[in-house]
Length: 303
Image (tube, rainbow, N blue to C red; front, side):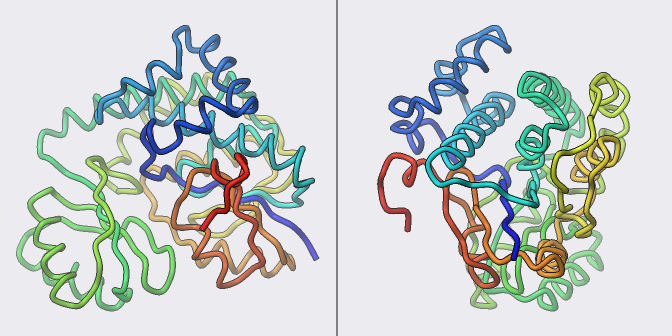
């Protein structure tokens, strides 16, 4: 039976929620110190002072934390996976872990592409976002999308994480309507990102950032296969991983496809590495799970 490591997507995690790990863990100190040298400014200080619209800071800090946790898991838990999964933004940590990109390359790629994405999003004009929720089935969502589309409103599926956990992209006004419909159908809203993720409206941006940022970096062949969170395909070539990361901009996440692939390769245990997120509970339905979070790394019991 095989082991896999999963780097989840960007969970809501401000400085205060991971403060103890950032300030007390020697693993975090190493990753944040290296990141500060690479970026040319103090990442811990920038993270502590960051405002909501500084996506580039939160993403670099999330990356540093994820890699620090994987360092800890390798040394303390003997983590040695045969497969790697980068869910959504976790794909950047996966690129480092599989040795396709270096830490330096990935930080620079993340920082520069995110600054471009912010500008692109600002130029769209209309306020849009991505809303996550659960206790709503895919059929219910499709009915909701069909109804809103018939009214001339733009809305599309952004993430299919499990049978009852999903996300949609829409205008801010439409998201408020969706929240009301979710409550009416006894579902529960989780959170709204004030940005689009996994949306067809990012296709033009994807091609722009491919040419201006991604193509400046050499993606090397991977040391272990990476499983796509879009279609469940396995990737071992560097250029293929680059395309997987780029497809994350404008294709919805379909996590059940990833699960199918891991099962096909007889994966029995999964390390979920990163600040607290939805993926631990989702994955526990299918595999033995080891949660590697700031809490576990500091000796606390993760719930």
